[in-house]
Length: 126
Image 1 (cartoon, rainbow, N blue to C red):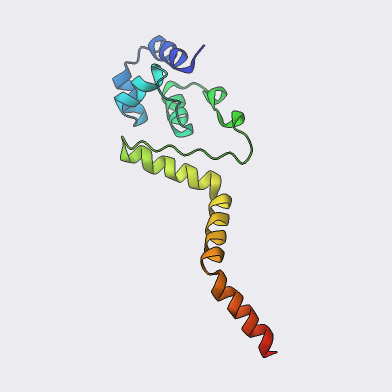
Image 2 (tube, rainbow, N blue to C red; image 1 turned 120 degrees about the vertical axis):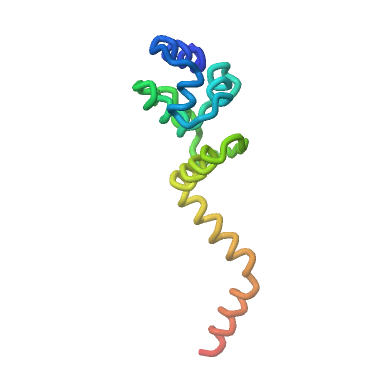
């Protein structure tokens, strides 16, 4: 069963409207509608807050286990600023090592000539 249909089934069995679920989760009504219609794959944050609101474990629907090692996907659709901030926090929390490596490599590449000259000058002065 697709996640959207399962979510709708759980929500309706608990007598929640989409609007009530949106209010309890902090997600927009449109986001709930898009998830239930399988138009989007919910983020880990969305799964977490929906699961908490419905008092249901939705971790089995997490797509994290399906991703390949070192695969990095980034899709940003700004519809709700709170959702964007929460997703950025999650992105940084889960990928801080990769982000740090990218920054270090970028710094070294952009300053390669200065670093090289500094090493050569330091080497020749001894």
